[in-house]
Image (cartoon, rainbow, N blue to C red; front, side, top):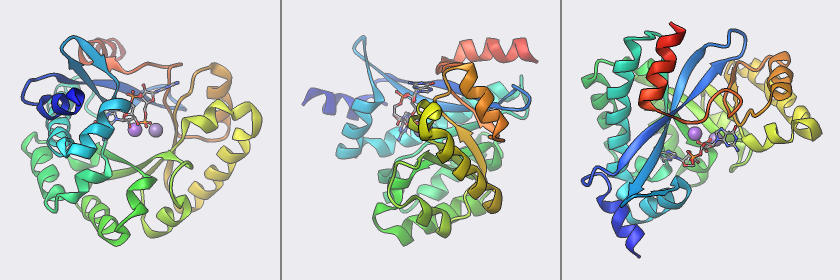
Length: 250
Ligand code: G
Ligand code: G
Ligand code: NA
Ligand code: MN
């Protein structure tokens, strides 16, 4: 299929770029972190990551793409930290990328070559990362943390054996899946409360994703959620737009 061949060439053809969606500290309203999200302009057509990430995972292109994402996001973070020195960045990583036994070392090398402190970098993984070869993956994640990287569990609550992941790993952030925020007015609120109780004991910080209206933001802040992300605040922004926004806020 030509999309599959296309994605394998996307890095060398310079067709990829990143957009950045802010993550807001709920009590101050400040931008604490930006999540880097990949975009592919394939001969003038914007292909969704929900389409091309699975293709790149299948044909292995995700490995090269993944290192490009880290390189590019470090380059951009360095520029953004000149405006906001405490800004952090979150990067999505899929399970296939961990197949490279040198993944941890390579990531560390890229980050340090840009003079970025690893604790300014959040690695977002989904619970599905732990569906196979659990011990290998847990050790990789621990190695990343030992180097200072922060670990976020993305789409929390939807994946494979959520609670067992938390038992095995001392993670840093939990991102409650958007579906629970969308259903906040139904039973979502009870699920969010349960996650908050759990996070208090385990000392990890909680991010609510997919926050689209003020009622949701207020309810989540009242529950003590630390960070909010969603269209209420910002859609994923092109770098230049984010840069202007940060300049206005500083
Ligand atoms: O940006 P958007 O909401 O369209 O992203 C759709 C999906 O693609 C999300 O699940 C997101 O985690 C994933 N995604 C976006 N950028 C990256 C990336 O750089 N690497 C990986 N592995 N997944 C990404
Ligand atoms: O799986 P992950 O959480 O990385 O996916 C991020 C995706 O969610 C991106 O494609 C982004 O565009 C999308 N997204 C971010 N905020 C919102 C929101 O408030 N509402 C909806 N519907 N989608 C969102
Ligand atoms: Na994510
Ligand atoms: Mn998510």
